[in-house]
Length: 305
Image (cartoon, rainbow, N blue to C red; front, side, top):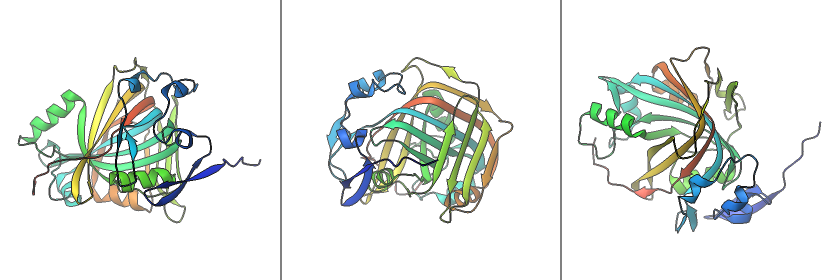
């Protein structure tokens, strides 16, 4: 059966030439997307969450842009694992320290994303990251942990973040300072099963996931909103990136069973192995959500952790 090739147009991002779908949201709106147009998309339940977050035009390393970047229909799967703090610390810049759940034990995560409708059009993404203490904590680690759980907010440092489109790579790497590269990346998430596969440079499996999807619970827009702050080094300084997730349908499983995480050969698998994970303690799957991803802002980070 023949595959219909999507027509593309070329756009410039800070001197980088990338191709985006002709007639897609980025081609038409350049990040200043008309919410009334998005609301007509049958894949999007509501745009109310975004009407409360007005966009601002800012200068960036990829040229003038609007922030936040809106993701109108999202699904993702997050594996939260215990790992040795010593292994985590070995992968962190000296300015940061692991967020510990017990002495010598920290948290790492492997996440797979599918962005069906967003300002820069459809793409998929995966991540390996670790939980860190807030940059200006000045408190005991357990206090930071309790505060994070109470506020449903976590601070993180990302080790790898592959994507499958050029525009996502340029914006994420040059605009945000994230370790992004382009590769073959497939993510399929529905109420029955969650699967994902990231390819290495040779096209073989870097990392893959297969698991039953936890039972989903629907929530009104704005009822279940969590956030994550990630730290990146860009333009010669530390910056913080705020990511807000509006969960419309999601579920979790503690000590998940029948979960298959395959580590192959590639950067993501190398990053997972380097953290020496002990066990997977939680699986979170969102079959329908929305995200507001803010542009980086300079942040004060101590010289040493």
